[in-house]
Length: 408
Ligand SMILES: [Mn+2]
Image 1 (cartoon, helix red, strand yellow):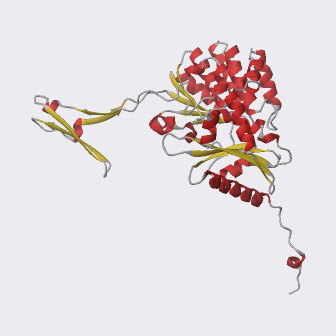
Image 2: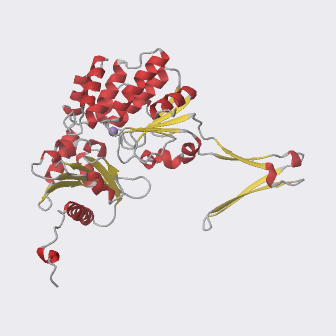
Image 3: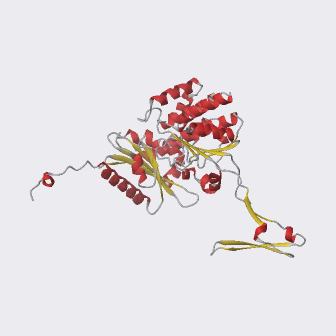
């Protein structure tokens, strides 16, 4: 009988010794919670674990123990090594030179032996790429969402079996093993069942106070403290189980929802003063520029929660959108847009899809390269979304009496 994704995951973990555990860039509570919970549990059963998450981690999560163990990138791997077997020319000297033709984008390395000849067969290539027996991607709908980790270390993802554990409907099944559970409210919820099985087979209690706290953090963030319509009976059951295992629920609520640095409050002020209410279709949106973020001394990570706590409170609108300008170290700035469905019938992932984004029906996001005037670019995005929404929700046109007439 074919193994379930969960059984395959357990098998692969059993066989692996060095494991890379990672999550999407600009992580939310579910990403960070699942990364720390699985990373620490794997260490507890004797695995050599590297935890990597690209991009800024919000200071909101600083209450989570061992947050500092998460690296922003991998070490090594940049050196490309060319090895030449010099048996045929070992008695003489070797002269080494190189020519870099930047126009033709070609680097030629010239090795000239004083005696004998070097041949193609004498050359081999290698790199100091770090080695892993398995990669586990958590809460990652598509592999590009890993950011620079994937861009810089693509080869690792080709050479290593990847386990993809996620709950996004837009997950594109990039792993060798794809444990994608659309009924789970969060990746953390999926991990509870994995850690229970791993605890039993390793005779180790993996759901410690800390691990339960990480997992509950993910469930609380992805369900909006159990307020989102996506909250299921199972999420309550799992949460109760985690509190029973020692999860510090009060601390999570206090740190995530009741403690706001001054910079965050100022940023919320900016978002509120930029709010625009559109009539047709009814929606609400706000946008923040880099200059506005800088002016209040806030980071983009502080925008986490703004859409759920401010924009979603607007009555009588179908959906909410928050656009923020982000600095990108490589290719110019980007516009990041988060969307939330407010009316139950709205599918914001379909709207995000027109800009190459994705997510869930109730929460989705997309990115666009920054170009031209910020105000105009934002307006164009909003107009396209409104047009698509109107088009997709237009009621079926019933044939008119004229069409039904058989007279000619
Ligand atoms: Mn999630």
